[in-house]
Image 1 (cartoon, one colour):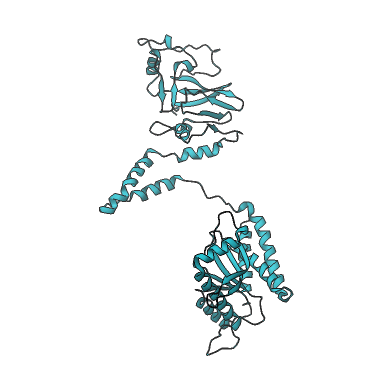
Image 2 (cartoon, helix red, strand yellow):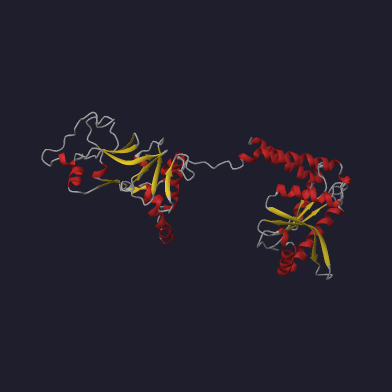
Length: 418
């Protein structure tokens, strides 16, 4: 098997570059003889003064060059190969520090002494210096492997090398750049952008990280607690004052809907019909500054729809209809309040908002939490779903049994990932 043109070998405190020119070493000696240097693969600058065995003066154009074979001069066997050896880095502590003239990238390059580099770590196609490209990012130095805090792990560096574009990819990229314009005005059949995406996707082998893994056990405990707590609350709802009940339920809602970052209670909203103010029970604020209205009722004994039919339908109970209409009026007054309302609410709750945060009233939605559905008959359940969809444009209607099911679904999903 033919050996590569460039190899690396650690010998004592030195890192050697072993160069085997495909067309022999004579042309290299010829350049060194006249004081020139040689650049290999657009990356390494090889000069006479870093040559391990400087026998340039012994080489002649007529007779060629015959290497000396003094066994004490090297601690590795030349093996009679047509090759040249250069010292390109010296050891300091845990790292080889590259000679800046041999690897001219503009910053210091350190390689951990346990690393086993190949020429592909340094040279890309079309005679491109990989570290030269990396150095264009203007870091103070490049460290590969080892314990240094700014070191690039060897495994990650090899992934980077694998992602470096090939000549084929560069051709695909050029075609993709012109494809969009050309196909807009002509009947060209080839989609260059799609070809580039396919080429790159075949090369990418990384898989998304499971970002939730470190927190999954804690999340399981959290939702187990919430589920057990809600079940206890529902067994004795009359033992809670309304404000306490609402405060605990809204915490569960925020944990099930992480977009919400704050809940305001007892919010005064201007009533444009009467000229006075209404007191809104709960206003939820999301991470973008938008607000939603929440109405929370303690569960009552009867179902959400009538047990008896009215003209063959189970119609919504008065408590349900009243809650939805109440939310609808809150939404109406908030929207009519507009910019002045945004400024008023932002100023009122400034101490509970991040610096520079602004409350926005942009098409707010409603949420009604009340009642049970576990004991509904199939007919009642069907008519209740019709009622929910009928009021969908005003508010989402969520029963306490819905909350239980959602908590159980989240728990089952989390447990499946353990």
